[in-house]
Image (cartoon, rainbow, N blue to C red):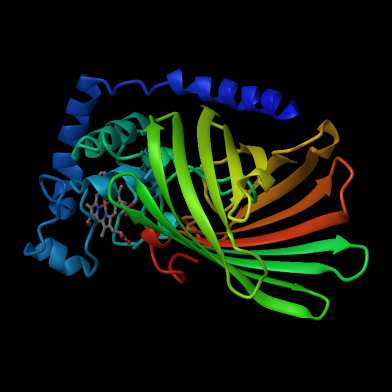
Length: 355
Ligand code: HEC
């Protein structure tokens, strides 16, 4: 069956699991500690936890985050911190009280002090923020996060066009988990309905600085739509191939409650070209999706291609827009689909911060 070769491609991607991060060099960490004590501790506190009672911290009017908190420390990519340290809080959408250090510290010093503040919490059990990769349009994301996402989809087809809108609310739970709530609205011709609600849970199974693998289960409950609903399960994988290329892939199985054997398999993959460390840029990506019913005769495999761009809207990129167009590569009942995705990573600040 065709889906086996598709499965093999996924297994090949999983072999990337063997990649792991290089450990930080102890001498660099020592230099980082000295830089931190001299330049940063007055505001950020000797241990990385700011001293709320100190006159300096009170005078700032904004409380620096606690580097010794493992959840916070793990979820921020080191590269973002290097940018904040070099160019200051304002440049990355944070408070301007965080001063730019680019004139005082060399690039090497910035790496050393970042390495040091990363060492202030034991984050081994937390997926690293490096693996919070750009959101694809159809491929499932592996990183457990705090995010609100709106997806609008227009399907151009014979007869009335169809519209689908999804509101996703994703909330980090503990070290590796994420709760999922999705509201799906559909309209076509005279029908316009809150089709279903989806509730689920995602768990990071394996991760390093270079890869992440998660598993999830979601139950789709019909509201106004017909049917008994379905169980969806997926594996989601992400990896950094080089500083500028990231790939993500997901394998999803959908089991209708009426008859599990009527379900389908979906394999999706995407490559993003990350050409700049500045989040407020346009990043191109190319995505491919294949779906097939479990009971497929070979001809039922549907392929689509989905070129897209991500546009960082805020200076820190915690609010971003995705625009994409999907084209059928096999025989399909529709001509094209257009997507608009607006995402807000609410762990990184309010929606209105940092524009
Ligand atoms: C004058 C006080 C002050 C000094 C000195 C200072 N910082 Fe900050 N820093 C802040 C404040 C305030 C914030 C919080 C900004 C916000 O959350 O909007 C911050 C934020 C940061 C962040 C971003 C954390 C996040 O929210 O993602 C990093 C990283 C950081 N500082 C590192 C350093 C390092 C390293 C040094 C020394 C080289 C340093 N800071 C020196 C006040 C300071």
